[in-house]
Image (cartoon, rainbow over all chains, first blue to last red; front, top):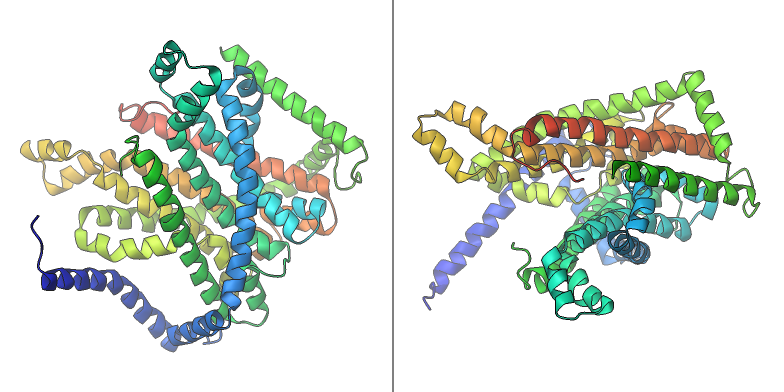
Length: 266
Length: 258
């Protein structure tokens, strides 16, 4: 195979890197100029240098990692709960007319209500702390997962089912070997939504349920002391966690399943 | 078919109501935190009659509409430019993909410090929540316009402007409308959440949060019903209507899910 010489490849990499960095540099310059000469006091609008120092300090003494880990743990626990309930409901609705008639109206009304709106109610019912936060994440995750699993199960090609039946597949096998893999593309977008939505909500929930750690709490608590640099460092961590989840969890998952099976191209 | 669906809906809501009512009256939890449906209805009716509900809804709608309007004015042009010009895409795409996954609500405390409590903070929040889905969807839409249409139009002598208004814009519309939907869903969460933390006296989110202080669960659940109905109404009435009038009528997408 033809190989591009190393120097050219290196130069291309550098160029791509520079192109990627350029927008951030431009924004950083504007931010810095605004911080230095803008109308906001520096306590409210810290310069880039201040934010970076704070970020490094908080990352160094493990505070950021602690809060990020707490948030991720809550997210995972809640998501697992929501996924189990959502997939069960979705499969039930997809396979049985009965369940569809009874459950679908409830699910489609519940789905568009922002999970966050329930936060005060959950606080009253389950007290402050971890329990309402995890339950709320599960609750917010279950709806999109249920809806997507349902449409996934229904989207399985009729002909696959018929040919499997013709070849003598029992109900159990049909489900495991045809329906489940066939609806997987939809199910994957379900959890994607089912994780994206609650992770958006969780940050605010942590502000409202007065937990003792977590990125939302870190940002909210910093407000008391006008620590805008801590807030911005926290927001940066949230962005990094979000991007990492997407790149490390979902894309490989998609690659190793539905893309490999040729059901979806990317 | 249709009758069956309606009957199913009625039965499912009826069963859910009965289950809730049984739970509320069972005394497992104090009545103050699990109000019966009748209480919720009375509280809701009271708020409608003395007009407070309309003021809450009005404030929330005002915030979301201004924020969404600003987001459309900024997001759609940026998305279009990104789809048309490589250098714009290379500049904005990294920024958008880093900022988009950050939940808008994470900015609430900072926005409160910057803009104070009240309308400005909520509007800024809606703007942040709505802009990125609009940019991303418009960008995808412009890129997905069939090459053949563009070539055909240029072959028939369309100028840059005609090409844009007659081919690119309508061609990208299914995605742009999907973007509106996503933007609305996100800003609906943002505005309710933002009002809980940053509003001063009015707004649906504030109404929910405020009733927590006094344990008025009936008011809280009544407001939740309104939030759900309004969100559903926007989705079903406005966005579906826009879709049937434009892209579905033009035959670009099959009519939305059954």
